[in-house]
Structures are given as structure tokens and as C-alpha cells.
Image 1 (cartoon, rainbow, N blue to C red):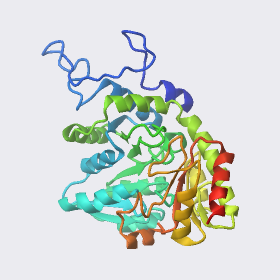
Image 2 (cartoon, rainbow, N blue to C red; image 1 turned 180 degrees about the vertical axis):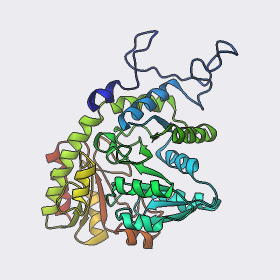
Image 3 (cartoon, one colour; image 1 turned 90 degrees about the horizontal axis):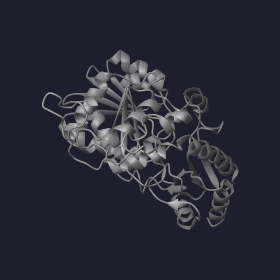
Image 4 (cartoon, one colour; image 1 turned 45 degrees about the vertical axis):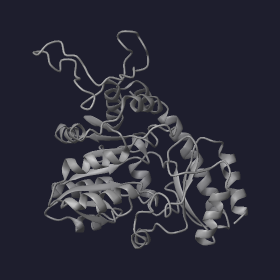
Length: 383
């Protein structure tokens, strides 16, 4: 079956008792067992270990990503944490994209590093730099592509080969492109990870995370952490995310087409210094983006002439777009990463990886493209 059919039907069936077409919200901690000998015969015992509503979402996302299993978590960051805990221990070394979500950077450098896990932040856009960073104790390579917020892309297949040779697990954060546009497991990765808060939900309604495994062995390791740490997604959130998934492809197609038009408008505007969007031929990794993904997504960034002050003035005065930290929603959002999403990243590190002070990140929503462009044009007139 095609993606559009599977995003609606995969993982769910009508409720056998009532015929409800929507999976019920199983708001229950406890599941009664038929007998001692039939313990776990119905698959559930306690909702920290598994819940029927959450399981429906996990089955759907696993199907869309082409994995053997998916584990859903309370937040995207708890999904990242669980993945790192599943494959790293004291004395281990991990390689992480030098451009990554600020929370991933914070988790690695300020929390897990306390427990004897060593991290190298490498330019994953350069496979040779990744290979050079590999050590004898490298157990995990964490690639975010396209990267937040610079949109830098990494060659998933090439890095997967490096990880395989090193005996390391290759994890790809697939949040920006989703399985509709990019399938990391098909390209050789071991794990595909999501903040379901973004495009999977799509409506600014929930926070959540998902970890999809290619093998049963990896799935078991992630499930063990999910159960042991008690970070499973709630049934209410799973139910809402199940509904969001049904329109994923429709939303992504419109948002991506709109993002392309907006990127072209910004690139031609005299008050814009530079624009980064994988769909533009001027984008450094445009050809790689075309090769490993079927779409360019709805995220972009641009720099306004006049530096930080001009960028702030634009964001403080723009209409239609909302100044907010999230992304991937039906509402168009605009963000200043240096003061918002990546404020915890040291200034020198931000500058090294290209998160410049004047960078304005844009998440394109479902509003009329013309209205979004008009709003940007009016705001640029004021700077």
C-alpha cells in the first residue's frame, strides 16, 4: 500500500466491541489477566510498560518508517535520552552532528557527560570528518539531517557505512522531513528518531517522541529503557498524534511548496543577506537533498541585512507568522535560535557551526502562501 493509505490505516483497526473507527483512549493503568498461566496473553499489564492507544501509534509510525518496532515517549528529548541510554555506557564515545537541536547538545554535554560518556561534535555533512572522529570505543553516531537550525544535510548512507565498520549504532533524527520525505532505515541507518511534537502531531497540541528500530535487538534495548525510566507517551497524547498522522502527507506537500515559494521570494529580496533552504539550487547540499529525500520540507532560515537588531525588529513586528519556539505545525512560526532554541549552546560553538546571531528560522504552515509572503514583505519594509 502507498504512504497516504498507510498513514491513515496502518496500526489501527475498528474497535472490536463498539465498531469505533477511531482507536479508543485506554485511560487505564491496570490490565486484569485471565489467569496466572495466561499472564500477558492480552499483551498489556501496566501502562508504564505498554498501553493499547500508544501501541496503535507505535505500530503506525513503525510501518511508515519501515522498522520492526517503534517506542513512543513523553517528549522528543526523552526519546533522544532513551536512545543514548540504550546504546551508551560509562567509557563509551558518541559522535553527534555539530549542528543539532539545542536540547540534544545540552543533554550530551551537560548531563550524560557526567556519567563517563564522551562526545565528539563532528561535521556530519563531511563523511571524512565523521570517519576521522571514530574511536575504538565509539558506540553511537547521532546524525540530525536536515540539521536544526542551519538546515545542513548529511549523507545518511555514507555515515551508515562508517557506523557499520565501527560497530556503532547509527541514529538519524528524522523530525524535519518525516518518513513521508525521508526513510533513514532504507538508507542504512539503524534508528530513526522523531519529535512527534512537530510534523507527526502538526497542530501544536502535544509533545512526544518516537524511536523506530530496524532490528529486534535494537528495539528490545530501547524498550528496556522506555519501561525502566517510565518515559512512555500518555494515551491522550498518542490518540491526538494518531489523528495528526492521517494528514501528514497532505500537510507536508502544501507546506513544502509554500516554503519553496517563500525561499525564492526571500532570496530575491534586497534586505535579505542569505537564505538556506534545501530546495534552492543555491543551497550547498541541494543535490544530496534530492538524492536521499523525496521532498525538501517546510523549514528554512534567512538573515536580514542589518544584523541582530534588524532581525529582532522583523520578528517583533511581523503579522500572520507567530514568534514561537516550536516547528512543524499548521501555524507558521518564526524563531530567533540564538536567543530561543539554541540559547544554551555556547556562543563560540554556535559561531563555529554557523548559527549566526542574525539567523531567523522559519517553519512554514498552512496559511495562504501569498499572505505569508505579504507579511514578510511588510515586516522587511520596516527594517
